[in-house]
Length: 442
Image (cartoon, rainbow, N blue to C red):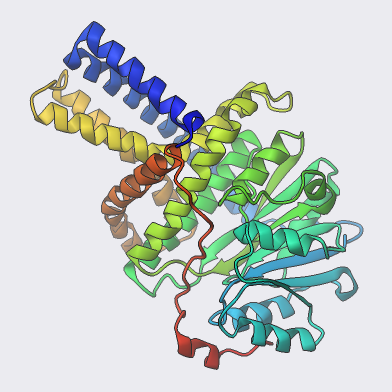
C-alpha cells in the first residue's frame, strides 16, 4: 500500500477526528456540510459561466466559415487497435475519405496485440497502400499510450492526429484541426465528438446527451471563459515536436489525454478547441460498459489530480484565474466522492445525529449537488436543437449519477490504496464473433 497516496486521506481523517473532539459530532457534521455546500456552489457557478458563454457564442462559431492557413502542415494520423474487427471496416473507410492533400498525409494503425481478425484485416488494408500497419506483441505494456508511442517512432508529420478505432471522422476534420497550429504557441487542438449510436439502448441515449453537453457547453466554456480546453485523447491533434519534447504519451496513466494536457499547459503551450471539427464515435450500450469506461476515466483523472495539483499552482505560465479553473478541472472526478460524503451526512441527519439548521438548508444542499450538471445538460440539448421530448430524459440522469457516485468512490478508494489497474478497452456494440464477417477494410 502506497503511503504517499494515503497521506491525503489520513490527514483528512485526522483533521475530522480533531474537529469531533473539539466541536462534538453534531457541530462537526454541520461544518462538513457547510464546506461541501461551498464546493457545490463553486462548481455550480462554474457550470453557469460555461452555460452562459456557450449560449452567447457557440451558434455563431458553429456557423463561422473556415479560415484556412496559407500552407498545410504534414499530418500523421494514428489509431491504436486491440481486437477491433467489429469496427475496423467503418474506421478505414472514414480514414480513406479524409479531405487532406495526399502527399502531406500519413496514416498509421497499430495492431496492439490483437487476438481476433484485426491483424488479418489490417494486412489487407495496408496492402492497398492506404497506410502503415505497426504491430505490438500480445501483452505489451502501457495500453493505448504504449501503442501510440510505438507509432510515434514512425511519424513523419508535423502534426499528429489521433482517433480511436470506433471513430468515424468527418472528411474535413483534419483541415479544421490543423489550422490552429498557425499560432506557434498552440501545441494541441481538440475537436468535437458526437455519439453515433444513441438509439441502440437507453444508456447509449444518455451518453449521447452527456457528450452533447460536454462538448457544446463544458469544453466550449472552458475555452471561452479561461482559454483552457482539454486535449481529449481522440479526434485531437498535437504538434509532433512538442510531443516528442515531452517524451510522448505517459504509459503510467490510463487517461493519457488529461496527463498530456497538463504537461503541455505547464510547459507553456496552449491547447485550442474547435467545435466544428466533428467525428462520430460509439457510446457504451450497457450499464456494465458504462461502469467500466467511467471507472477508468475516474481512476485516471484522480491520478492526474494527485500528480499535478501542486505543480499547477507553481506554474509561471498560468494566471490566477487559470490556476483556479485548472484545479477545479482536475478535481471534477472527485465530485462523486464528495457526493458520497453528502449521502453519509443525509443519513446522519435523518438518523437524528444532527438535523439541518432549517428545511431550506436541506433543500439548497441537495439541489446544488445536481443543479449545475443538469443546467449543462439542458443547455446542450437546447444548442443541439434537440426535440422537446429529450428534456424528459434528464430525469434518468439522477439514478445514473448514483452509479457515478459508486464507481467514482470505488475508483478513489482503489487509487489511494494503490491497487493495480491497467488500461482496458471499451467494448464495442458489435463485439461478437460474427461481426468480422460483415466488415471489410476499404
